[in-house]
Image (cartoon, rainbow, N blue to C red; front, side, top):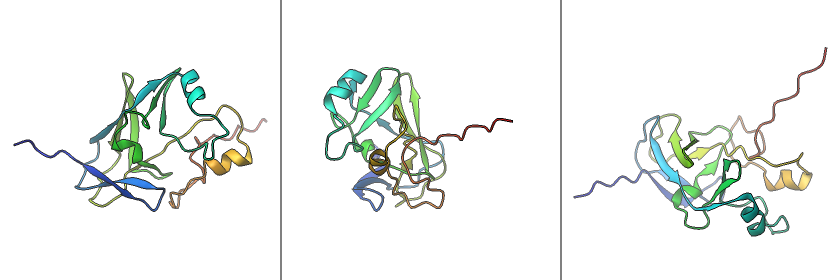
Length: 157
C-alpha cells in the first residue's frame, strides 16, 4: 500500500487568500514541495501579465534567474499557495532550474507554511507598487513589503 506523503493542505489563510498548512510535523531541512508550472521567458511573462491589470502584484511567478520563470498559474501545484512572511518557516531553493520549498525549522501540524518572496522590481517602486506588494504577514519582524529587502547604502566619510 502506498504511503501518504502529503505534508500540507491548502485552506483559507489569514495572511492572504489561501495558504499551505502543515498536516503533520515537518522536520527542519525537509523538502516540502517542488514549485512547478509552465516555464516562460521574460518576454512571455511581459506579454501575459500587463501592469494595467486590476491586481498587478498578484501572480504565481517564480523568477529562476536570467530569462527563466515558472508560472504556477499554468500547470502548477499546491505549492503556489504557500504565502509570504518576513519571518518565514521555509525557504525556496533553486537547484538545476527546479525550485524546492524547504523547512527552515521544525514545523508543527496546523502551522501555515511561509517563505520570504523577496520579490524584485526593476526600478525604485512607486507608491502604487508599494501598495500592490504590501506584506500582510503580521510578524513582529514585518518589513511591510514582499519586495526584496534593500540594504541601506553606506555613508560616505
